[in-house]
Image (cartoon, rainbow, N blue to C red):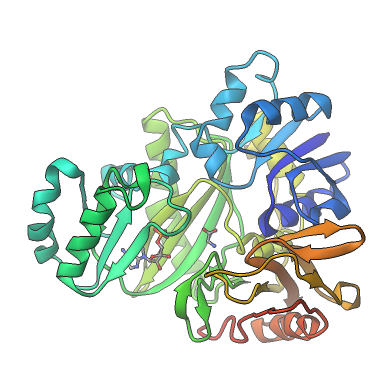
Length: 422
Ligand code: AMP
Ligand code: GLY
């Protein structure tokens, strides 16, 4: 089997690393990939958002299955593009079609779906330009802080949490007036939930699903969960509070009703579903759905899959996921992200990364790197995710931090306190 993985981050490197270990997989191509993916696969200079280019790459390289890493091509309809083209119709795309990807692509759709299906989530109301006049009176029914979300994809910047009512109202207006472009044609305002977050993943062929290991992501740039939001500074799996009792609630109250809701609404979902959950006094609530795996969660979730992950991919491709099995590694996995100085604000790219060959006992997943002759250079804000296994969170983290001490690039920064709250 030849696979094409779309994307260029740590998630895509983790997928490449894992799937390259499968006996059933011959070649892996990654578009566009990074310096790390080029070790176990072949990078293609193709933009995942250019579906015609993707098609060309699929035909030229005799691809059997396409796996979509990031959300944008899914929300833009890459799955539908394949189904509509006789040349590539039979090549399975792992990732939902446009209608199913609305779970991530439209917060308003997701909230309506959650509400219709009685799935626990924060209470909310959506507004557009026509109903903007009612924002003030709705905000007054909530207690601060106010959670304000642009409806569409806004590169991770579309969620604002604001203490002051007047400021919140101003923000809603500026989003409706185009602050995030079309993504802000609608705004969701919701109740603030207090609790600790975790990420739960399933893979589904549209009929049955397999639960994957859960993870906790550390989103803030600063230690002690302070400072600006990032794409994620590190992750841990398993999550200690996600015990059997809690995960039973997640299955019964959230995953099963989501699957039933999709079936009832004739939405055939093929791919990964990422449930962004919050634990409020022992009860799980949905903060958001994503139509893909998380990053950096993938860099701990995938390393905890002990069995052949291609079985799951093939199960979705063939629609026989129910006969496939998945086995987890009991050990803890942790990952610590090394980022460019200044991230998530402005930062400089093109810094030479040294010391990668000195790493032992951890796996380094590349997130934002490229190759320049024989050197690895930085090409993004999040640069490397150093993943390790251990008997405990503490033991796994000790390996990650030890190996990080060998790695260097100018301006390199990482959080020293991943897992501090667990
Ligand atoms: P989202 O992009 O929807 O995941 O939101 C980004 C972040 O905002 C989440 O990871 C949470 O930390 C926070 N957040 C979103 N919705 C809520 C909510 N209703 N209550 C508390 N925090 C929230
Ligand atoms: N780490 C959060 C995400 O992938 O959205």
